[in-house]
Length: 220
Image 1 (cartoon, helix red, strand yellow):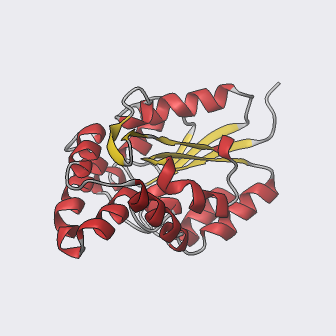
Image 2 (cartoon, rainbow, N blue to C red):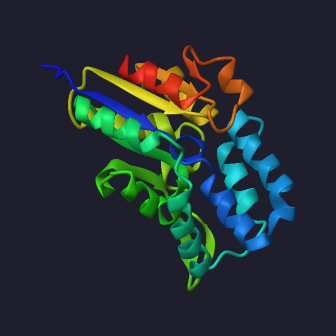
Image 3 (cartoon, rainbow, N blue to C red):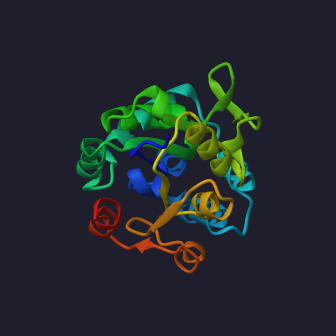
């Protein structure tokens, strides 16, 4: 029997958070002069002109990140929550929805901010760094979220844990839209309140330009 509970999953970077978390950490390390180069690589992965894995690796190659860099950025990311998002998540949970976070970002960067937003560790699905001592040495490519097609796979896994009335995905990038085109999500809402990705805006069946519009789609 299918329950009345919806599964509502959110992308994190430029959705739950008002920044790209890896980019945030890189700019803290390299300074604002690196913004343009970082943004170009990020946009390539979000719009689909680069594979998501290519985008991740190229950005990580820009700087040598230490554990201390990641820890400091994780603390600062707690102040980068998208305005209005805590209230929306509370409303969804009060409605009885199951809410999860699926991110191409890195759990070491995101854990504190997502905890503040009410996510348990079991609600969080994200990439993981590989380490050599105190230095980030790469990404765990065995994690499906490290490349295109990973979010549909993870969303399908979550959905199989129990029956849901419907499975929804919210996000700004093509890796989020893939959950719909691959059949893992029943509904997809593209979110442009932080970053408008034209490849998503043009193809998403439902697109929210603002947080209020997103809330209307999810709660209406």
